[in-house]
Length: 173
Image 1 (cartoon, rainbow, N blue to C red):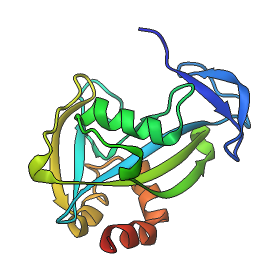
Image 2: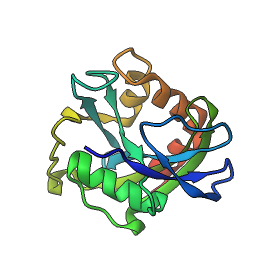
Image 3: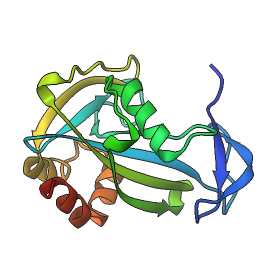
């Protein structure tokens, strides 16, 4: 399987004009963009998925996300990741931008979105080799659950850095 190809960016999200390959070291001062999507029902339940046992951080729970590919916008990457990982189809207008977060430890710029779905009309299709289970958890319980060792810790850190923004978007729609 060929390595993913990403656009290389500076910390201000300006394209640098060259490709970055997933499996190669990222030079200092170069970043790639990762999207994280919080999928929320009309009853304020958050959809979380469990990572496949053969992946890093095996069997931990998380929200949907991944790196955007060469030529994609963050919105296009979020739409693709939702479709690939859990089978949910959305459009640009369904995405609610929450925040952008530069994470120097892994040379990533995270773009976080919330998307609202109708749980009764949504069929979840887990991606083979990526996810093995899913569940909906009420938002207030989600905020407690992510404090546990069962949740991916660095996603938790980004959530809590912007918790008030998430609260506002989720509670004021």
